[in-house]
Image (cartoon, rainbow, N blue to C red):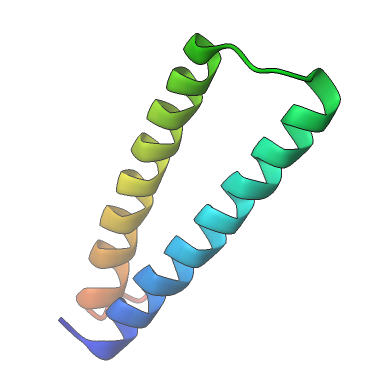
Length: 67
């Protein structure tokens, strides 16, 4: 893997994790307690988004794509 791909994936990971923590904090303050079912759906959505983002970053950055 190229260094720019690794840096892009690490940056993406940091941004996604911080965004998720901020979103959870705002949700807890606004709605109080969150049901377990809602948290499971949220976590699944976060995992899918993260995986799709990493795959797209890998495809775009690793092949020297003009995008």
